[in-house]
Amino acid sequence: MIKLILGDITKLKVDAIVNAANAELVPGGGVDGAIRRAAGHELSEACERLGGCPTGEARLTLGFHLPARYVIHTAGPVWQGGDQGEAELLRQCYRSCFKQAMEKDIETIAFPCISTGVYGFPKQKAAAIAIKEMHFFENRFSEIIACCHSEEDRRIYLQVLGK
Ligand code: APR
Image 1 (cartoon, rainbow, N blue to C red):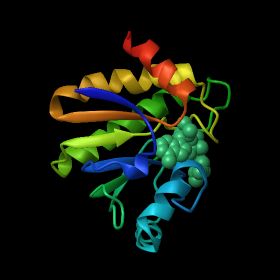
Image 2: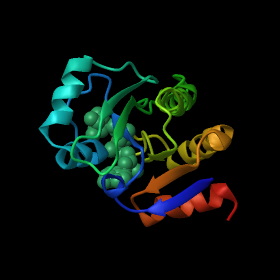
Image 3: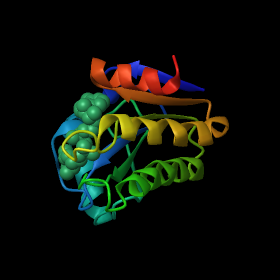
Image 4: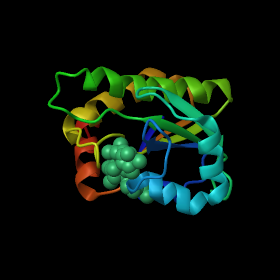
């Protein structure tokens, strides 16, 4: 089941939340800053030990002080106009996260709108990619949550979902 919510991903009691990180896995703003603040310094220490995550790949840590058991960190592509493989890299992000989740028997997973903040990926295009990948993996999980943080994002996702 795909569920759409408007809210703060750090508050969700799910098996795993996804973080829109950078390839160095060093502290950022946006959803990464919110997750690091809520999870505590242990999360940043765990990220440091991982030593990075190439764009399109994903890495797993514990959630530490978060209600979520795990955080799956993925580095999305920076939007550069669309002809640098950005769409395929964003697709890879979702697939890599789902793969990590399946290795850990994660049943419930929540995603932010990867790459659509600081990285500037057009929201509509990104939502279409996100929803397509979520549908592809839908029957492997009991709940896949698309966690929008703005009313605008929620409207776009509703549109893409055909609701
Ligand atoms: N819960 C859910 N979504 C959130 C939250 C939150 N608490 N805070 C922000 N967001 C949303 C933003 O509204 C946006 O839709 O997360 C989405 C992704 O935005 P960014 O966090 O800016 O991520 P991204 O565009 O992938 O850029 C990644 O930003 O923070 C740095 O280190 C990070 O360099 C990396 C870059």
